[in-house]
Image (cartoon, rainbow, N blue to C red; front, side):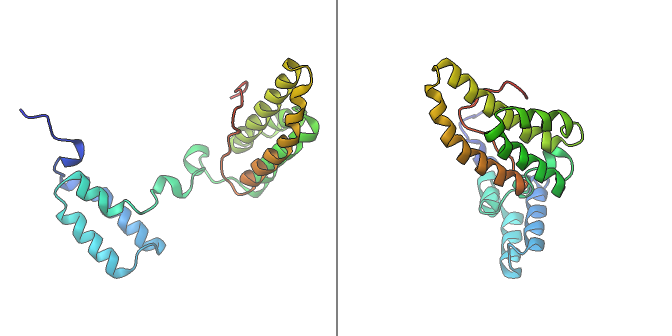
Length: 174
């Protein structure tokens, strides 16, 4: 038995072609492909011999998992109220330190996983900043100027319904 073949060089079956054709149909329905390109790609998918050939058919299309990034994680898309509360957790974290994100996480986090996730991110960020300030005897307080900007960016992400993770943050609350 020769095991020198790469995974991409393995031959494909009809069962492996079906999800690719379904993805092409979704892309055509979304308007990502015109009719001629759809026909050509379906033909290429049906005649693909290897996994590399099959992968080339959909390589430039956005995967279905990235089209609605929050729906698989939170069940249903966040409501407008959820997005506003999540944005408030980020925006109010800067002037109130960790108090507003904590309150929003405890009160609204029970109702919405989306609000809880964003409030937990904001809470972790504010606690990390507070710890940095304490450990550096106040010198870390200079970082709070940057915190306002990062909190505003996080609030915009929350308003648009997208997840956000603060960089270089300790994860105290999950």
